[in-house]
Length: 169
Length: 142
Image (cartoon, rainbow over all chains, first blue to last red; front, side):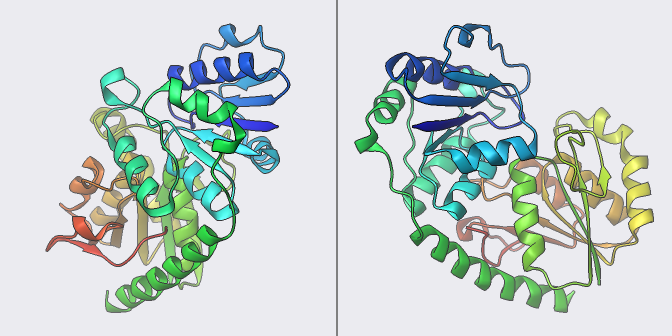
């Protein structure tokens, strides 16, 4: 199995790093890639040969890792949520919390709640249930095309309204 | 119609690219941040957050020069603070401006979005429950 963990491009995310380490320990045969975010301290991961971790990958590198991944595990950042839903890629979220100093506010909790409701994207409040869900592939969400179709309909409607607004301006 | 699209790299940029595909116009120009990772914009600003006012203010001349060079009929931003700065430069230069608040903000408009309400031609949210007399909901990207 190939898993891509990503903390986005703005901030490090130590709790997601803990999840990477625990999954690496429990599933040594899986290949884990981790985009850890700028300023991440990755020394603790070097003992795991099945983990390839960097603070940031370039766009092209990231795209190749994304395409190869069987599962994407991410903070509740929109770039990854959009990319996974469009591609029908299985995704799990660990939203950042302001109370743990992981972001400036709790909008990722709101995002996670909203995308759980709308697209059934699983979100976890803490590392232990996230790791349990990752290591047991029967807990993985199904990817697939239903989200893709819904996105297409939603955007067509938005485009009509937006272009009508432009003609009024 | 020439449109200047502005967003910082990351989730805001992901939304901007999708939005740009939906808009009917003749020419699209892009402003972003993180040049070393993100080569696909025409112009760049340094990233900052909306609370770091001094870092934003310092870049206002660059933002105005981007608007001057690109001569847009309309400026559209999906955030965050660097997009707000371009929108503000556009306001100073009497361009039409539209703020589209990130779909990540499902319970409350972002702080940058609330600032955009002070000067943008139009402010949009992607969540119907956040619409007000000033902030319109016309749909969403997801």
